[in-house]
Length: 467
Image 1 (cartoon, rainbow, N blue to C red):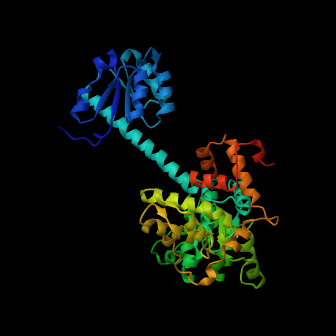
Image 2: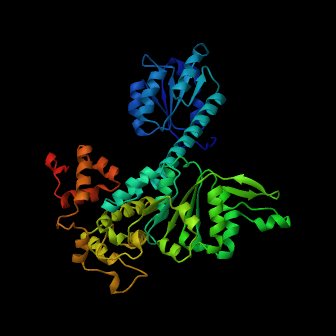
Image 3: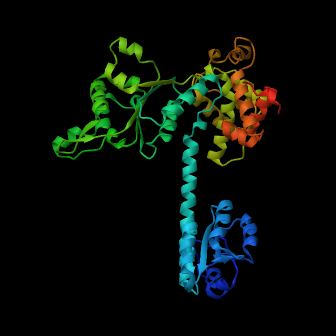
């Protein structure tokens, strides 16, 4: 028996005289491809729930044109490929089927070689299509606004502003402490801009020696004069996309003027003949400290500052938004499970209290690392206090009393944060109290949503939706 690289795929065939007389199915079984049969189109729709990679149908299914039947299949089983079998007299139906979404069509009677070629072609095409869908979903999940987790007032305002700025080409300066998520914010905005198909090129000035900055940004200019050729710099690689200047507060003063000139004119000199090339990109930058004092002290170029900061965004530290910690715990544990493929891990109430009482000097990044470490090493599928450890930031100064942290989650009136409560209540009402849809919309897990509903004593009553 001949082995086949597509032998693990399952094929369902809707039987009728056209297929029985004209389709060479024996060659499929000879190639070790599992083939099953359905007596009608309706039966096939039920059988497709079992998971078939390919459906082979005649040009008329249960008395209806195959184009109408294809609509039903695609609506419910978009990952299943469809081959339509027709006759030379009805070849127009084959072309119409392709227009309606069929993967391929065959003219009966056919040959074993033609049947196998069509099946292989259809399966490979659907494999590529499904892989592309998964890739797009992965990219969207990694760069969606849902990844900016938080329902605190500061995060709500930040996301609202970022959504408005994302489609524009306005330069944005993002400030925030190390580990607060500045690059993530920049990537999310890039993904939601008209430049999403272009490159996102990040330049981290904290990781580049001063003597290498010009070469890395502008290319190997010095090599052009020696005839050794030239190497494209990061500015050229960002053409058509987004240039992200990370830790721009640590860019050496020696590069400020040249970088400002480039951002102003968008011109770069390339090639041995020193050709001027126009570069089109969006610029975003991030700094761990405010640049205004550096301007005052003459340590930062004023024009460069103006060019990178048409709009400013600030990411709060994790200690400034403790009400978001529970949401982030749920988010990072779900991400860990997705990344590792291991069983889901939950967290006990005492472990949550321990995380809430910590000051998080490393911000969101430290919380992520802490949870990944705990989830990897825990003995069962629920994190307990003994599983939580804080590395690299030892000392009593990093832990605060729980009572002190609760004060941060209350308004001056003493009530629990009304903003977060109202957002959850409105989302539940908008989704008719469907917890799965509400959790997805808010970017949190169902368990976290249940905890919040219980904490805020929300019930399915109109009075719970605050104006």
